[in-house]
Amino acid sequence: MDTFSEVSKSRKILERILGILLILISIAIGAYLIPSFLPLIRKTPYLLLEPDALVRHELSRDWFLQSVGWIIAYFAFRNGRAFLRDSKKPS
Image (cartoon, rainbow, N blue to C red; front, side):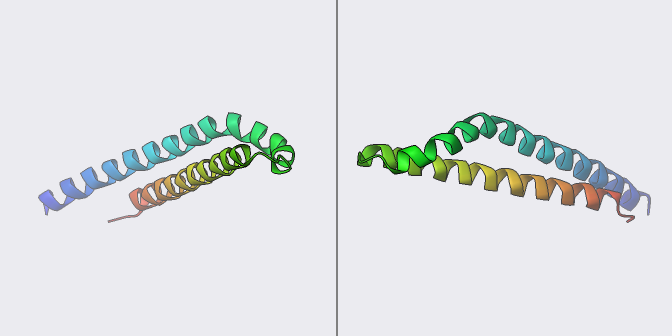
């Protein structure tokens, strides 16, 4: 029984650490994306009317990369929160 409680305690510590790390990673990704997101929102209406296809392609690429970054940040935060919840459950 002693071995089981040791493993359970170690697992809870590991889950808590992983949860905190994933939440911090999601915050860091969000902080990295926000400075480029606000100007992107401001310039989008003007660049959509631009006749140059290269400019519109760069705009669509920027929006795609922003979307992928926010999706990664969302899932990292959600998984980090789940790890923290699991670490608080009694075993």
